[in-house]
Image (cartoon, rainbow, N blue to C red):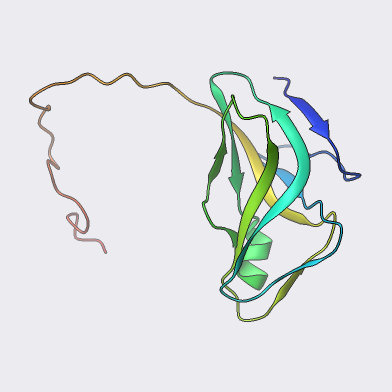
Length: 144
């Protein structure tokens, strides 16, 4: 599948780092470093603009290494970039760690996963089919 992209940064395009990777790394595009203090969030620009085919979305997800080593994650994970969005791709990061984290230009800050999706149509009804679980919700399986 081809996705149209405009790259206004001088960074590499998102790329799969291994042969079977599902996600491509997104890089920051900042004129000067951003310090992300503990318990703070920031919207980080990438300099990328995309045209995603109808029936697909781009999911913005955390990078596991940043989460594990520094407590840095994507706040609205996964963030969704819809097929009709034409603005700059930005990543909403939050620092759940205990130390300030510096985001420099070109830093790998998130992953981008392209995913197919369906468009649902509601069917209004007065009853739903029975299942073994029924209306059992949080904690109903005995595993907390």
